[in-house]
Image 1 (tube, helix red, strand yellow):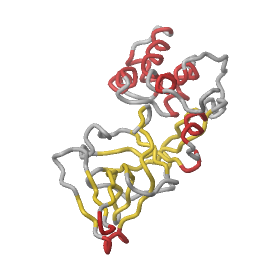
Image 2 (image 1 turned 45 degrees about the vertical axis):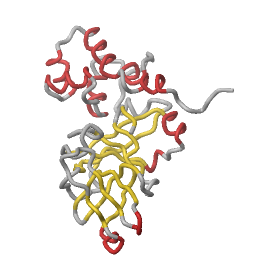
Image 3 (image 1 turned 90 degrees about the vertical axis):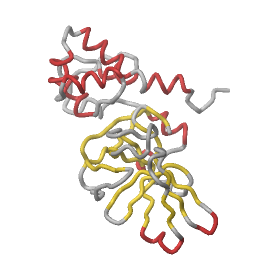
Image 4 (image 1 turned 180 degrees about the vertical axis):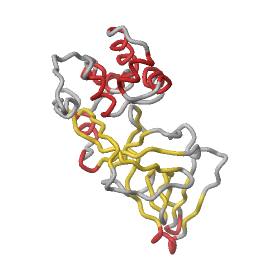
Length: 230
């Protein structure tokens, strides 16, 4: 019997080796990091971060480098297809689902107001990743984290995918508190209160009493960072 779940090794083949495969494509084309990054619309330091796995490229970048002959399917999934350039090359790839990345910042301290109308880019993930965990792709959105209060769990400027179908603590959640968005670990405690926890021990925990929960809205659970699972 074949398991429906994806092994850690399989998932790494989808996401964790993007940087190395991107470097291979740049080398194949004989281009420097600076020149290659310029084609993708980023600086040399960003290109270096992509290749070392510190950051992951978005769709706009992938669409640009496809125009100069980069095998984007290989970069994303490790296998090569004979794909010709088109106005929407990544969207046309079979076996993927789109995740909108919103042009907002969700901080572990202060945040900005959530603007559901502003989509910065779209990131495409394999269908198998959603199916393996029973996640509805239509319920997943992406935001950019800011600040250091979640420590290594969520670093500054990392892209976080949020499952809006899951809103029941405990875990790491995207919260709306007044006009702010926050990424916090939420734990239910005795008496119906919530404890908001920062994984960086330099930040104090925050207790939300039952009578104050009306001012806190759970947007969804942090499902994964781009390339990493919570």
